[in-house]
Length: 168
Picture 1 (tube, rainbow, N blue to C red):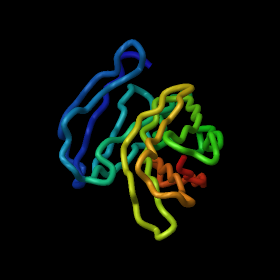
Picture 2 (cartoon, rainbow, N blue to C red):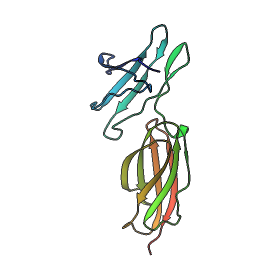
Picture 3 (cartoon, rainbow, N blue to C red):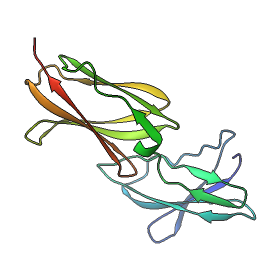
Picture 4 (cartoon, one colour):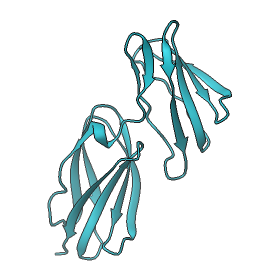
């Protein structure tokens, strides 16, 4: 939706900044400090259900989706695992590079973690997936064993995929 007023509020509901959606319906609030915020879309004659999100060191960015159904603007939260499809890790066993195919309807940020059998996080990174993507995880130098690939969406959802790491 073009030219919709978007307001960013702090935790006490004080307005911080305003933006207008562009021709693609997008808006952007850059360089926000960690904290809890509310996003409010304002369109004349239409009721709004806002979206609240929290940014932290563990979740430094978020993608928010707003849905206009004619009578209301509804925050549908952050797109995440429920709106995405995931393949299996391949090849399995993995030697140097684990791969997983991911498809999303919208740009979706994920935290990707690789966990060994001791429960230790041996790799952690943030990725944004848009459409059909191939995520690759470097496994060179890791000892042989079973690993869990954890994808965590901003909506709190989690997806686990296990694979075997083999060395030549």
